[in-house]
Image (cartoon, rainbow, N blue to C red; front, top):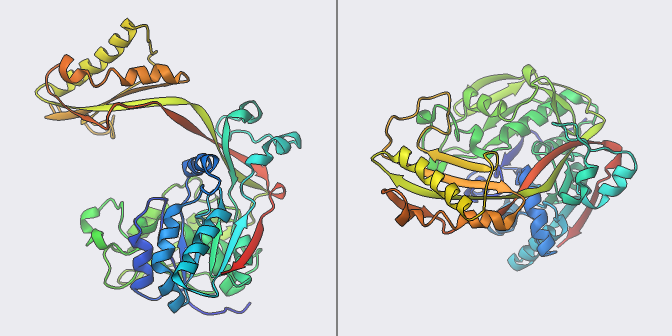
Length: 457
């Protein structure tokens, strides 16, 4: 096992589709780097992308990624930085084509762009079910088959293996579909250090490194409970992993950037989206988060060591999204005095007027929320006795879109035919929108075959 270079500097510049473009741009421009990774995908994102693709066969990927490549590619070529991103969504080849177009426009020659496919199993669902895959909902135990007609996307969480294959073929940019968040970081470490797929402690270390940086600045001071201690969040530095071949690594950021890297900021991210801390399951391994040892080894430098891991499971997780009716939500700003009572009255008026017109919603279908009365921390913190103003959010859900749109027509009239103090109506008359629900399931990993293609531009 011979390392190609050491340490390897791996930074993550996007925590989700919609994160700041300044993250990756500043990472590339403000200091040394070997790999720029970008995590764009969440469960709901895949269904949004599938819907976009159904309308336009050239859509279905993270369009922000293409603009980001335009802004950083010349500097990446100059510094030798490789890019690994799960920006492909449900259409990795279209994403590659868009990136290739940018590469040609910039006049950067000899770029090798890789595409990893195989995670999208939407078209294979009937065949898989016929072969015995039940795809049971991991929460309810229900089988998917009765809901098959409503499914809009189905993507398997794939691991680092095909990304390593792409890097081994000389890829400068690797675009995947639903690769797991940590795997885009695991792959560069496996490739650079020549690790084997049965070295589970090393794979666990890389997985933990990937988990720490997968949400971008959330480990460098963003979303930190003691936020007053975090300097210059406007210029927060995005995280960098300084990885070593023995599996140890340092979490840091570029010098002269905002934010802070401490044992506490790193720990806060470690416990984010955590199930069983002794069995953090990924396609690459099962990592034991209770084995992690963290120590502050310098300003904005936290060293991690001692990580342990085990073999991966024989199943992979599938993220399935399906149509589950419609919803509608509108909102009014209501000023005091008696703002809360007036908001409650407004909600009652809307549903009573609808009933007068023969449009009735059951209590289970209705949605009423008065922002300003401690709805975010209900039952934990006391609500203010008499807030000076509140926001009434009112809506409903169901399967009759026209019925829901009728509700949207009764919110605006409250400005002149409700109690006093209705001072603002946000967003225009609301319209019913589709509800996309999440269906987590497991599939035999032998049913999933990924492919790697590399194209030189």
